[in-house]
Each structure stands twice: as C-alpha cells, then as structure tokens.
Length: 194
Figure (tube, rainbow, N blue to C red):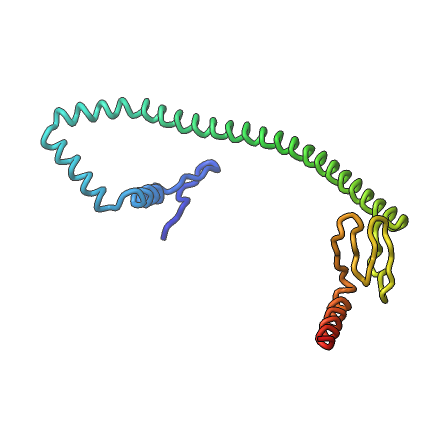
C-alpha cells in the first residue's frame, strides 16, 4: 500500500518521505548498480576508519565546497541552455530571413522562366506558321501518292529530295518503301539483261 499523499495541512499536500527515498534509490540504480554503490560505500567507510584526520579534513572541505560547486554547475547548465536557446532563436531568425529572400528569388526566376518559355513558344509557332504559309517548311502528310512539292533550294526527283547546291540525296519517310521496291525492280532488270 503506497500512498503519495500522507499529510494534509492548510490545503497543502506533502509527499511521502518513503516515496521520495524510493525515487532517489531507483534513480541511483539507473546510474550505478546496487553492488557497485555498496563497494564504493565500503571503500569510503574503510578509508574514513583507517585515516580519520585526513578523512575529516576532506569531509569539511567537501562540505564547504559543495555550495560553490553546486552554484557553478547550475550557472554552467543554465548558461549553456540560455545560449543554446539564444543561438537557436538567432539561427531560426536568419533562416526565416533567408527563406523570405529565397521565396522572392524563386518568384522572380519563375516569372522570368515562364516569360522566356512563352516568348520562345510564340516564336516557334509563328515561325512554323510563316514557314508553312510561304512554303519554306513542309507540312507533315502533304507528300502522298508520289506528288512532288518543290521548296526553294530543293527539288524532288522520284520521291527523293535532292539538294541543288550539294547534290546530296535526302530520304523521306513516305518514300522509303517505294525506293526499296524500285531498287529491287532495277536489280531484276539488270539480271534479265545479262
């Protein structure tokens, strides 16, 4: 039967001393096992029993130094926590400032990229329409059934596009099958002539 509240006086509750001791012992058990603590206690007790003057001197020194050491440890921990919180706050502030700058930089670059893309798309569509209207560009699918269309600087001979300047022959997709059939007919004709 464990009770956390044992005494009530003027509306204030006092915790049970036994519960405080059990909490402290369980915390000490997490730091060091009971066997290790018992060995340390035996070593200190033996030292105090064998050298009482030296142990009393060290005990008084430890007693008087305990308060300044406790204050130093408290100050150090609080300073570290305060400076960590301050550094975190300052760091977060500058990260937010950089985030705002990054946001507006991305807005500007997005606007410039979209405007550039729109300009290039309009130029592409305009050039294609003007080229098709003037005949400088071929419209896909117009060359069917062996009809030959002439473009400036190029001629069409037997489904093969031929450059006037260099004499190079360019093959179109529609006439590739027809050209292979014509090559086979020529081979058959040469074989029959021989």
